[in-house]
Image (tube, rainbow over all chains, first blue to last red; front, side, top):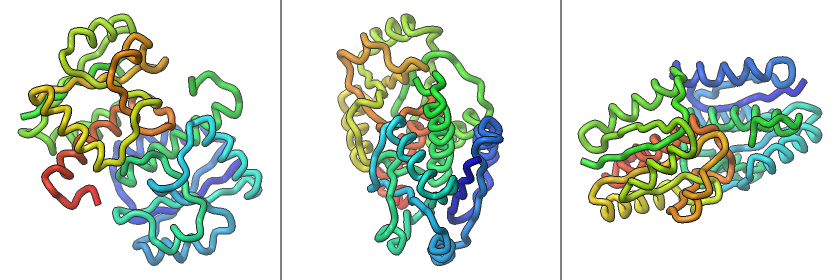
Length: 140
Length: 140
C-alpha cells in the first residue's frame, strides 16, 4: 500500500473537484491511499513541509515528464520513501521560495494552473501511473 | 465577441466537468462564447475539422507555451481568424493522423490527459488568456 500525503494551502470547496477526485480515489482503493492536509497560509505550509521525510513539490518551472516518465519517477520516489511520499501544491502565489530552493520540483506543464486543477491533474496522473506500472491499456 | 468552437470525439456526461466548465463559460459571457460539437468517431472528427476555416489541434507533442505565451498565441489566432477559432481535442486514441499532419498543434503538457481533463484545462486557459489580455491579476 502506497501512502500519499498532499499538502496544500487554502482548502477549497468546489463540489465538482471533490466529485472528480473521489472517483480516482475509489479506483485506487487498496493500492494507493491519499491524505489531504491543508495549511492556512504559506508559512504553515513551509512548516508542515519541513517535517516531511520525503517530499516533492509541484512547480511550473520544475522537471517536465511524459506520463510514462512520470510513472517511473513516482515508482522510484515510492521506493526511496518506503512507499510514502508527500507532494506539495503551492497556493495562488505559487510555491514558497523556501520550498523552491531545496526540493525536488515537478512540473505538470509550463502553463500555470489553478491549484484546484493542479490537484485534479496530479491525482489523475497518479492513477495513470498505477495503470502504467501494472501494464493496463488505460494510458494509451 | 470571440467565438470558439470545440470539436471533440465521444460526448461524455461527467457532471463534475459540466459544472466546472459552466463556471468559466459564465465568467466569459459577453466576451467569448463557446460551441461544443461532438463527433461520433475519428472519421467524423476529421470530416468536421476539414470544413473549418481556421483551426488548431491539441496534441501532447505540439508546441508548448507558458500561460502568457498561450494568451498571445490565442490573441494572434483570433486576429487571423476574424474572432473565430476552432479547437480540436482528440479522443482516447489521440489526435487522428490526418489532422496531425497539417494542423497547428498545441500542447497543454508533455503529460497525457484524459480528454475530459484536457477540455477543462483548455477552457481555464482561455479564461486565463482573457484575464491576461485585459491585465487582471487573476493569472499571477
